[in-house]
Length: 349
Image 1 (cartoon, one colour):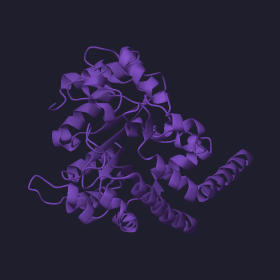
Image 2 (spheres, one colour):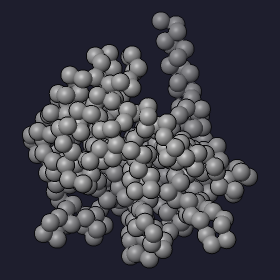
Image 3 (spheres, rainbow, N blue to C red):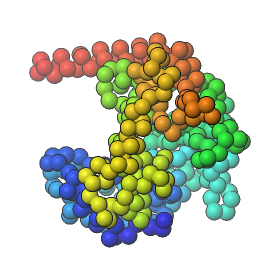
């Protein structure tokens, strides 16, 4: 698709301004490919144009997902001065990471990504680790967890690896199966819970989502929400899609150059996408864990030849909830007590 033009940026920001409510919020998250390839100046222009076009009483947040290879002092300065949240792709350990993530010369990129992590952390940039859980990663949970903590991350997001679209699941050497992912979640939780008990807290987004749901709070990820439609993807050519997992021709909603956000979000394609996520799998209707699982991401739903469906990681989550559900509930109770005490203290002031 190439790079997004300044004209497309102008259309995007103009339509965003039209859709913003007074005192509202808008979040811009930059992804790719690799979003740093376009260069620092693109982001300077985007931020300046956003300040010019968006209403002054609208709160704006910025984030970027990067492999870190191009991060230097100039990037760090931009990200820090504009309060960017940076997601940095680091797949656990050097050997696991370098197996799949190589640079243009075919060499492993761990050292470059870890250098970027230390540069960002030392500059005070908010940075999270995004670790793709492959078959190899799932086999070494302790090494993965400890290395990411040692690198300096306080927040980690583990994402189960996806096989190529239209390909039979499990055919690749890095393909993740449900049994391995379930064991990985349990092992990571053991390490996380032990640290939590000691007061050495590392945020892991999956576990935090479950705690939020147990507390009656909204989760932080769309997969845990139970329905889709929380954001829009704008490609470089202005094409609009309902999700980055579904930036496909069949789910193209329209163009931000030609249509307003309200028009795009009231389109037949967008509404059918949302409705699709609301139609839960049959097995979910009688599952005891539905209230905290919510059916999972529709991208993990599999339709088999007889027309029935299942979530490819359903067994993973059941294994995790059956084994760790009680201790997860312990965390939620403790957090609830802390919140109640804090609210009581605030009311006494």
